[in-house]
Image 1 (cartoon, helix red, strand yellow):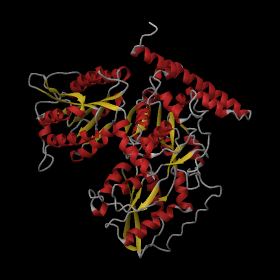
Image 2 (tube, helix red, strand yellow):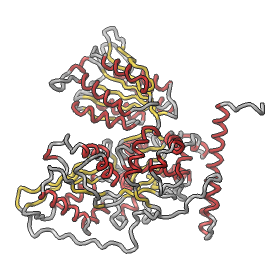
Image 3 (spheres, one colour):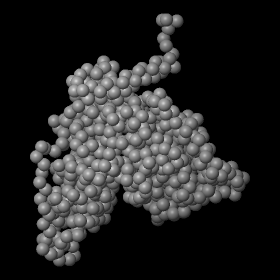
Image 4 (cartoon, helix red, strand yellow):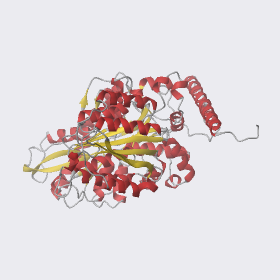
Length: 639
């Protein structure tokens, strides 16, 4: 009847048709803009307004006044002047802590600096490079690096963004001084496999962030463009709690929702209406990962078995990561480097028209009581070197822009980078960073996660004077629960094989909203005890199918498998080939991400890697069982 309220299904159909109309209009307009630009027209703002469906007039293509774009007069970098001869031994050691993303550049700078004689206060200098995720280093700085032995604590911290320095200071890190010296820059871009970028036209006409989020939310986008084999739009993002690219993605999302990517304010981030828009943006996220390397490693694996589009449609990363990928370099863990032939499906970097954030790679000499004057002076000299002509040459050949914004020509060609893109934006101040961090648990895509725990007899093995593998695993899972918030559904199952072949104990806490189920979950976890053999294949196959029954595109549906051994049973169960085939089928029909964690030296690493790889999830290494808490804490940032 004409006066009746439309059903939920009808509403969804209307919304889909509206999205398709907006997309068709946008693509048509993009073509018109290109043609108009060619003949010198000035009517692009009117056309852009039409593409946004009558919304407020967008900002013209421009560089923000807050942009770190270099000045018209380039800096002339001074020449390095090494010492006439090296100072005496023992050398003063300078430990430089960097992010995973800029670790190669820091290692190259350290090697070049150390190759020349240095004399600081009568001593030679040895520069050592260390690496960790920026968010984790910020937390460590807040605690005065108490978890690191005094002789190993960093002298210099060089994250890929000043946001981590300000966050650490705001949270009480007394050893992190104000300011910082930028060593290099790298733009944070949207990267897409070339076939996908060409299909949507973004390789020629860059979109705005609004266009990106609208396209990502259209489940039928690739089908409408003639590529149903690519599935839905899979947008990859790192976690803003640990990586700069994840921060930049959230700044862009909040800025788009508030009306200006360049001028996002902390007050806007706290508004419920804006958070609702960002929450809708986040639904397009396939899942979160800790570093860009994680996403790009999986994309390369997907290409090897078909197409990178099987894993991602686009990912928000820094330019240097695009360069690494296009020259065939990936890393499963951010540390181990895999060199291969360049991928057939190259990544295309896209610079959104309403601005892109620039990672400024700042360095500070820490002021903790473990840094003496000689170490501080040696660290300052190393940073001086980074700004010399020789240091900036290394910056460029390491895949970064120098402090004039210049690229190495070979890097630019391999990564298809724009030589001088307009629209670079300085990452926002501490008030915005803090507001985004506080809001992220509320706006991120919700998760439906089942912890699947090996409770075979080997879990009784002692790993310390006070812990067995089982008790340590219980402690780690309890701590990991703090990552989840209301709206996240979390459950617990365990597996061993009884003497009669039965898998025990099975599900012990159903997947339910953690806001109301936490006590029951912890009670079930505490009640687990070791027993029997290890039916790994049967457990993964059974519970993956169970999770698939309730999977939803509005949730990250996942299993976290923690196993300390190999499939070992007295009664026959499903085989490894059948298990992997079943997981691959689920991945295409009702996606369930199966994250695997090898716990202890006897864990079947090869099989656990195959399980995670079959579902597009990540494998985590806790073969040193004392590292379980840290590794599991890293894993849950995927949700």
